[in-house]
Length: 310
Image (cartoon, rainbow, N blue to C red):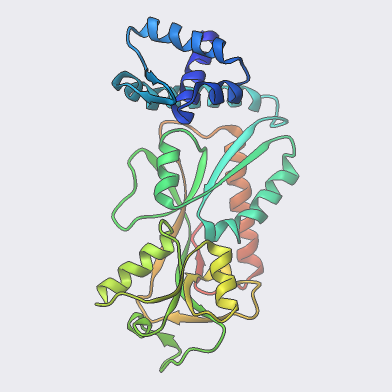
């Protein structure tokens, strides 16, 4: 059984790298040994998994069918291994958390510090990405927990979601923006060049959709930044940006202007796979997260436009 699992690991490595020598280096064996194990797996399955030609390795139809199953099997084996490690009292183990960029630069570092102080022997892995990518990785077993933006029309039925906070996107700028009632309407952004995130950001998608529904396409002074880059570009005076209110805390040079109701609200939830109960380490991380949010709520004030739900 162990050899069969190793064969699946070798197969996934070759499938992801599309190169036998690089895959062998990654898994720590010689290239001939890896090729032999792949060949044995192909014989056992009764079908070739790779098309091999000089300088080119591609998956066959059988290989394409096996790849998602192999990834899932290996993820489940890793989960089982971590569950056993949990029994020694969280002295060892690993927990994998996914989060959007806005939380990676604000809330997540303090949560992970709290968790690490309590469980220094547990390895932490953080994956930063958009909610769609995080949901896909959760469903494939590549993450234990993920903070995601709940979609407007329901979540993946394979996930359990726990709403944690609701926030309104705000407009960040260096100079005060002209308003009539202290708020901006989305149409006020029609003639105001924006600093815009790269494609794939939830905030970008929400902003573009709101502008489309208001009947215009926004213009950009700079486009394609990550969260820290966008905030720095706004601080440099290159334009305003629609951002989560939670990220402007600790940036005294930025002014926040709220969008008029209904604004651009979104709900952040903690998600995990429905069919895979949380490991002890993942449960401990969840508890650390809720404990930190409770302390934030008691200390106050909350960042602009943020309301805790948990």
